[in-house]
Length: 138
Length: 110
Image (cartoon, rainbow over all chains, first blue to last red; front, side, top):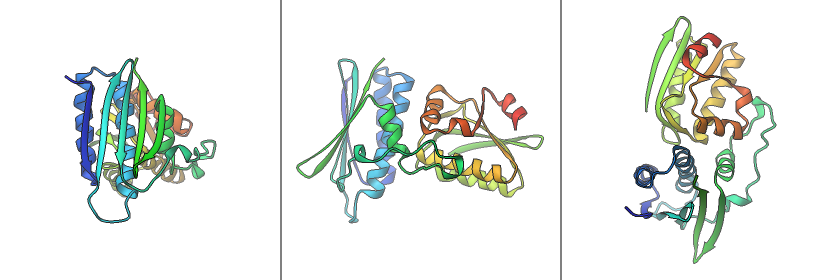
């Protein structure tokens, strides 16, 4: 059992499932709570979908790395990719006070991630995006 | 994705299984549209076997409640886990939906 794991996928929709399954196993091996697993699975789905669906303007194959690690009392998930730079932290939060008819859906995924994670950090390095999320473990 | 459906009088009960995410939200939406096309306007969606709902899934819930409210129907959600409830709370969805503890009370409210 290792508290660090890395998976590399290509920018295909169906590859997201590979990450989900790997994290499922990781989650069990490390006895993460249902709540932690739930929140991370959701964040992975939102972020990887964004990268795969909107991140690339060409039709080439691109690699996306996902690292999981547990240190002290926090789980860290890092996604590294070479899609066009997109800092989710700069995105405005949706206006949730709007009525049902006007309720926004765009931006909700990112907003949920910011709320459910303990921290979210983004930077670019050598042409790659690094998205680092941490979740304090209970 | 697997979506079981059954009827209790006029009420259609949907029991999706697994995840309502980017991959499966379309199927979930198709199922709702199919039931609507068959003339049903009173829905209970039982989430007891749902692991998580991503924003793509939330979009379908919003579409469904808008449509059903405009038709004078109902869309009740029951058996939601605490994690999913939190997602609904954060998203501002909780006040829009009628959420019940279990299926029986969902059917009664529909």
